[in-house]
Amino acid sequence: MERITDDQVARLARFVSARIPETASLQGEARRTAAALRLAANKQIAAVIFHRNSPAERSGGTELHATASWNLLVDLAKIWHDHPEFPADAAVETFDFDSESPL
Image 1 (spheres, rainbow, N blue to C red):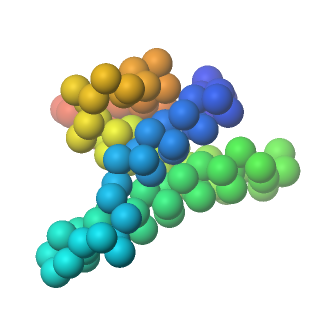
Image 2 (image 1 turned 30 degrees about the vertical axis):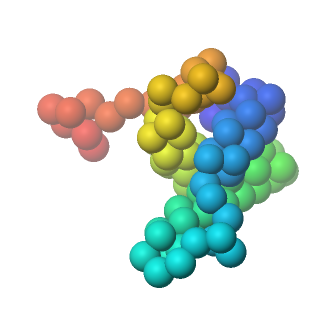
């Protein structure tokens, strides 16, 4: 998480949040889908921000969760990869799993 800047976090969070429609204008399944997507995105953003604002002595316990949350947020952003405002320089994963031996 150290190589991800505060600016990258802010830009990616804004980009993802702006792409998810407000639920008030939707109905039925579309409304539930948008609400679930917004909830998932907000939880990932909160986990990253919580980790970044944690004191150094607590950051070890929040880093794994924040890293996983960041990577999920990046994956959510990639849904709109073709969007002209896609922040490619912010949508950088913090680690990649080895597909042969992920653990």
